[in-house]
Image 1 (tube, one colour):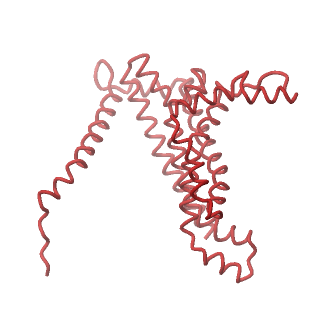
Image 2 (image 1 turned 180 degrees about the vertical axis):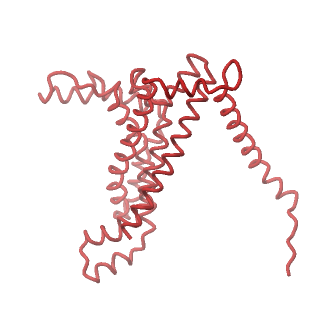
Image 3 (image 1 turned 90 degrees about the horizontal axis):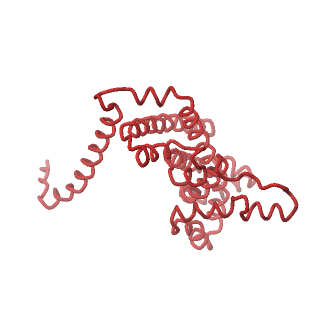
Length: 278
């Protein structure tokens, strides 16, 4: 038998950054839960009762979940044809992928404020619709849920494109060739081979975008205003304006619970859907 060689001190030092990061992570999580389950008098569920019982806070939860789900579904629906095009056009794939990823080079704040110019009452979209005579009064395209969905979808679409494209690139080309040889049409090949094999990437994109949306802060604040808040913008308000760190921590724990339960639900749906298509 070969004896296991003891780890050298140099290799052990490589673990030091990992241990530091893990220590900081668990320390921050401990501090989060310590603040969330406490108030000025000590341990308490006061802020959780307040958050879960107030009707306006329930509206914020519902808006965050429904809008985030809409953003995730819309992003995947728009990204799938783009990823499919990139997969097919092998010669132009790198160039087109750069075009898709260029928005990431621009600050999130700048991109979000750019939508104010497009969606405002005197913005480009309303101006074009009024010029063509389609509308007489400006449409309310921002400071509402619609504006938030548009802004978040624009920000998060590249994530979906990359995730779906990675699944498509993993499909072996001879599978399509074999399908054609056996007499399947292009649509049948797509429905029975390409779509099922690319579903894991699509669901990964759906989950990542949903989780990113429910924690969004900048876009809901800029395009939703104070009347259409997300949980993330509510946490920001508790920290920056009311300086209530305990309540902000309680909000964060609720958001963490929603994220975890949503992840379990979406993974269960993914397994069931992929199982039915096999």
